[in-house]
Image 1 (spheres, one colour):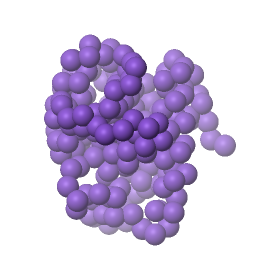
Image 2: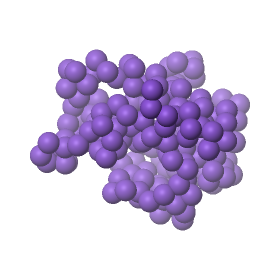
Image 3: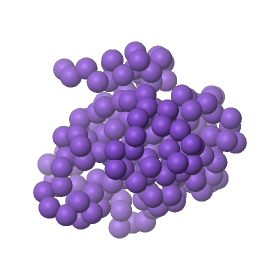
Image 4: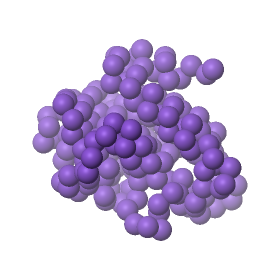
Length: 182
């Protein structure tokens, strides 16, 4: 069983904000793979097809660990079979990076998940949102600019390819495929 969790914040005010990049990716995957309407459980919405669960925690970002740990526990998912998708200010806008493990790097959603799972050994797909020009909170919770919105289809398509690489390969091969700059 594999678990993919896209992170974001619930509420209309957060729709199409940089901090909801993980949710945008989850929605994109659900639509592109005709997963239909999500089910509600694990403090979130999720879709299940075959041996893959796609989860959108409905907790606020800083409590994402509750949702992810509940789903992982229920489905008995190994840590190496969990992929967390989230926004990352340390990367330029639209750049993707996959990692097999590591610290949260200051991301509160990932901090919550690593704490709830009790391990740093959780694969993740980071989607760059660029550095904040001034206030970090205003930037991550801010809506995309017109230029950023125009780039979203390409970014989400590349993120979908990254998820597919993770589903179909071991983590080292997936990282090689995703992290190689064209």
